[in-house]
Length: 281
Image 1 (cartoon, rainbow, N blue to C red):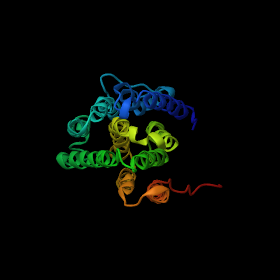
Image 2 (image 1 turned 90 degrees about the horizontal axis):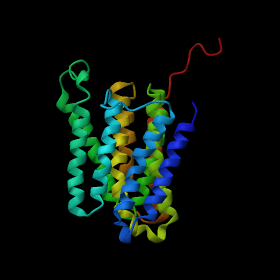
Image 3 (image 1 turned 180 degrees about the vertical axis):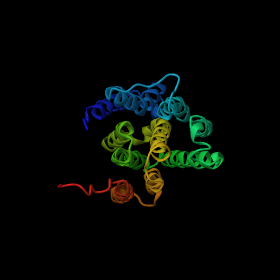
């Protein structure tokens, strides 16, 4: 597959990350910086989509369109969360509402056929998974785990690309690579600018909401509409929890990221295609 669309999305993400860091303001509370950085995952995914020759239907026509719309809605919620503790609570409630709508409304065709009427169970499980992912990012923001959380999200999203590609969702594999770029590149910027890491907490909160919502939506496409194993998707989405393990310093960061990589790698292994019995004939 041509990697050009993913590279274009990554370039867009990097530009917005650098703009966001430059405009972060005192203590990282500059609204322009939060707006720019929060836009990074959304813009990266949309740039990747259009570079792939695909478009977003307005109004949404399929679940992928709804997932991208949810990411767009999560963008201002992320900016809101960067304004302080109570704003973060409001953003948390907003992300939960976005998740519930995303998993309840556009999935109507599945409610009886595939979900056997257990709509509330499916919606609750998917929404709680999204909130757990967002909760990890909130817990890590403003601490020495912030960089770890971004790098972990980048690793997981990067691993999700082949996992989704092998299980029938090629376009989504490209899109999730955009999410990976927005998280991984920001984590590398945090590592490079450790002297101002205290200024990154509001920015981290701003970017976390759209990243988590988009990643959750992409993995849902694989599990609900394609053949991605549910356990593999759960392992991918839950792997960043490892960044909350105790330990300080670079060694602890390496251990946590190696653990995240191991979990993500195991999930990718579960999604690998079956050998072709006719190969060589």
